[in-house]
Length: 256
Image (cartoon, rainbow, N blue to C red):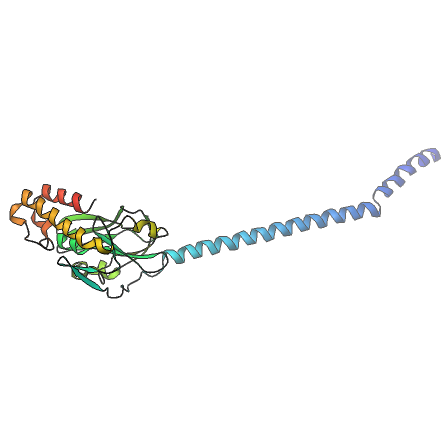
């Protein structure tokens, strides 16, 4: 029995040596490392949570920002070829206008030629805020009587505001198309490039005169009794002509 006890003793001694101070220290280091890793993961998760909350809160604030109601300053009007033309305004061939207001901000609307063609406007529907529109893409739908007409954006960019006064009282577009009757604000990063595709400066009056000449020529052929002697189109002309004539006029002048 004594021999057996002597043989077991070294094994117990070895076990005690394994569970000694060095092993305990290693275990403590491992535990400390795990705690550090868990702390880092916790901090990262909290950071991601805060960033996510901030992102969604900011997005909601941008999407629900109040729509602007203030119009542009009264434009300086110039009289040429019998037309009253606002200085510094640029015009799309589809008869919408744009006014650069600083930086990338542009105010857009419908010109007097289009307003006269339409006559009484009963309802307007503008592309929603935060929506990207391309130059020449539909921006606004105007309703006159039981007819709807689409007009295009003169510039490319994001719609940031809509003229609620015009939405509530569409007749202001016909009464004051270049100031109170503006349609929307567009943030246009490439406005300077877009302006190269627009009619501006000394070309506006001849272009409007050409539009009237073309209109009178088409109406004289398609609806002779509706032809005008000169100046702007007969008010509400589109509502007075037959559907097939109306369709041709809209394609020709609104480019929609």
